[in-house]
Structure formats: structure tokens, C-alpha cells
Length: 158
Image (cartoon, rainbow, N blue to C red; front, side):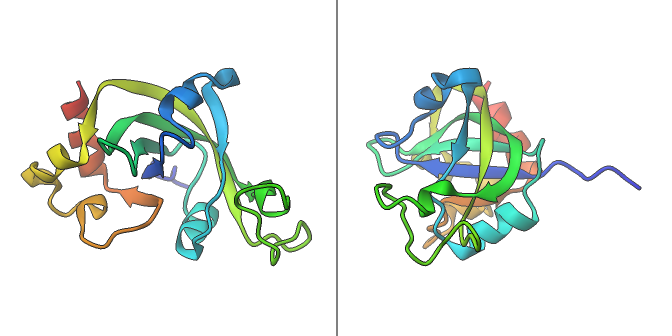
């Protein structure tokens, strides 16, 4: 049986809600990625995302949106407990612990970039023209990234 190839992802978070610095300050620089309320993303987390996969941490809905670092998946999908708690921002009354509707994964900070790779800058890079993040109308909070784009962006970050 051959080893599965690493998959690459981009995780969007509003920095005033949860930033790369917040992740850096968590015990072990690790935390759960909760609040996913999109079936397509939930299915990717459930069916495709595996421990050892890598991802970009992206700050969204802020003055300068862009990629700020990298993370690794350290725990595969499991029920998102915030869906069951009425006090949580992402509470979903239709989800319950017996039949969880929403999932999350745990991520660990790998590297914080010295400078943000802004969305505006990324849009000017011809090799990234097909990247899902840069397509018009893309609203997913977690999305796949090709190995080609992963390698290219990491070179830009050095």
C-alpha cells in the first residue's frame, strides 16, 4: 500500500476573532479549527483532510488580507463542540452530539511569515492565476491548495 501524498490547504480566519498570533500563544501552538458551517468544507475535512497535511494561515476581512504563515493538521476531523453549546457564536440547534452536523480539525503553527503575503500581491503573481483563493466569488473559509501553488507561495515567503 503506497503512502498518501500530503494535501495542502488554506485556512481563513478574521484576525480580530483568531489570528496567527493567537495560535502562536496557545499551549503547544495548537488549537482546534472550529466554526465551519459550510457543507463543502465539512466534507473536505471529513473525507480528504488528514493528519500531516499542511496549510496556509490566511487573515481575512481585515485592512490587509493575506497569508501570514503555515500550519499542519495534527488531529483529523471530529465533532465541533461549539455547535452544541447555546452560548457559542457557532451554535447550531439542528446539530447534536449523537448526530453531529459539523466537524473540526486541530492545527499546529509551523511558521509565521516575517511579512504578510497580501491578497493584492498574490493577485499580481502570474503563476498563481488559477489558485482557488484568487477566483472571483470564492467565499470558502477552508480550501484546497495545489502543490505547485504551495511551493511557489513558500518561495515567496522566504
